[in-house]
Image (cartoon, rainbow, N blue to C red; front, side):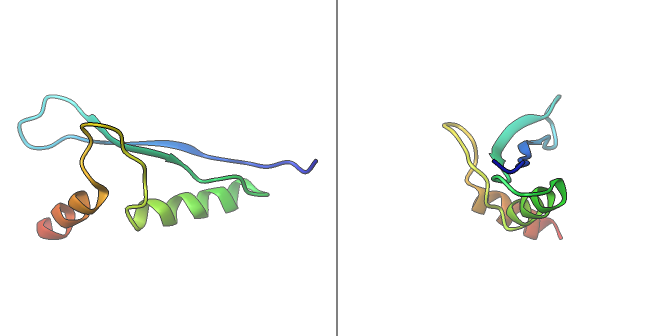
Length: 71
């Protein structure tokens, strides 16, 4: 069996008026042959707002719209 690497991540956000960061998403890079490949896939997923959510978390597309509105 070949060695594989995966990066698990959590995305948090603090909005104006919030005292602390809250979790808005999470995910994994998937399994890759090198840490660099895993990092590249992680970056692509975050950049394209392709993370998982659970109940009460905003939809990644809504986060994307808010980020674009702030530009």
